[in-house]
Image 1 (tube, helix red, strand yellow):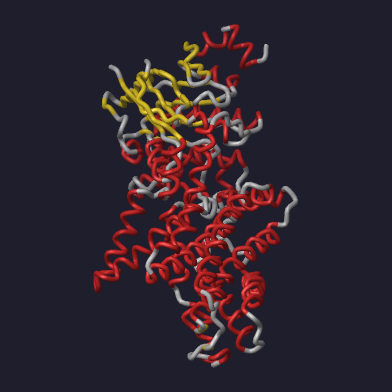
Image 2 (cartoon, chains in turn cyan, brown; image 1 turned 90 degrees about the vertical axis):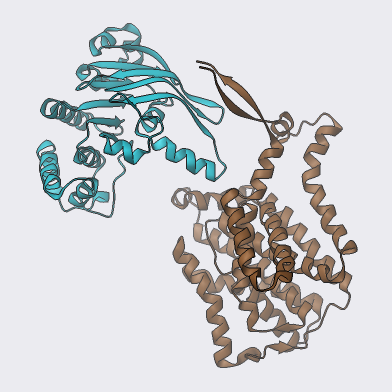
Length: 248
Length: 335
């Protein structure tokens, strides 16, 4: 469904992603595991196309030049230079790091804003679905999104991404800054989403422990380089992964 | 497939002279010294070779360069002012009054107007220091226009006629070189100031005022200080022009004094002060040169502004600086 080949991203002279290739099959959950500064967010921004926007902005203010090489193919079409809004229309939706939401609007309004591309009947169905997926959000319905806790905001952002009815969901560090309990809630929700809708999901994360058991295939990157790949079980059994990510 | 990318690398001299100053040859010393020394020499020589009309233009240009520097300084503290005319007019009126009513000599009125003008502007803007972004800009835009109308309506300080018969400098060389030297001091002084710890705090207020607050610094006190410094520079310009034209009146609050410095700083490149000066030295003579064109002057002027901003949005100075300090080469991308 998604095919990334030989992706290289330069920030000025620094190499953020080096010759990264991956493949995502329909209906799979894929994880990209790496520590800080491994290039996870860069990869997500490149997949969703946001980096094209950053590139132009940096160019205009004479800042860092961002250079991209390699190709991204989505449903066997080359989308390397497709604008982010077009990628959303094609069904690729990114849920960004640190849950950016519209703080001044309430929770339902946020969901409706996210459903901008949908018909109104689909929007209300989508809102119902999000509330079924995250029952804790129901009683916060009319609260301003800026006053939600970190975990609630994270649920909201995933809900907002789902409102777009994606074919492929990109989650950038969904567990960042959450308590272990909240992490489990979210992991359960992600499993549930896949079970119910068969959505293809790509997750980047540094907490490998809760993520690895549920994935179909995982990639481990360090300093922008792919160091290891394999199924979830394979990765969990690998002694190096154990040492680096499980502290065993 | 072989792909190429253009690599930009800092010149070795730049990397070494950036903060550690280990220069080993005359060539490297020249590399560091030429950019600041060249404009100084040019500024000092220009009055000697220019014809009288262009000397007046030069005087006007240096004034706008000073105003642009003071605007740039305010912006680097996070206060986008649209009312340099407030500072300018305040200085002009303080100097005019000191001369007209108190009869003080010129070497007293200008320094006094610089300090008191800056202080008055700070007091006037104190209540709005807590506003951020566009709200602060709106208030600064309105204040000079309001003062202009107050003077017109009440007829105080000469009303619409203004105060005439202010003492002139007497010597045109003194007149010329006073402002040039002040410009050079302001330019290099501000460039030094923003690299000191004090300047770093000011810049930090722009980047993230809340984290400065949480470091235990009173940002409103710092902002007031910055406002005073910037206001004093603006007031100096006003006081100086008052004595050059021997007149102070409502035109000193005109919108020109707010807009042109802003345009200069944007064209030249913000945050460097040298960029502001460069911008003023492009825009003001350009607007004079276009006087021959007649009716289309403003159109051409506006068009050139658009061209500058579209082609070099980062500012001319930043562009030149980058070209000077870095070299580029094509390298092949492996992989």
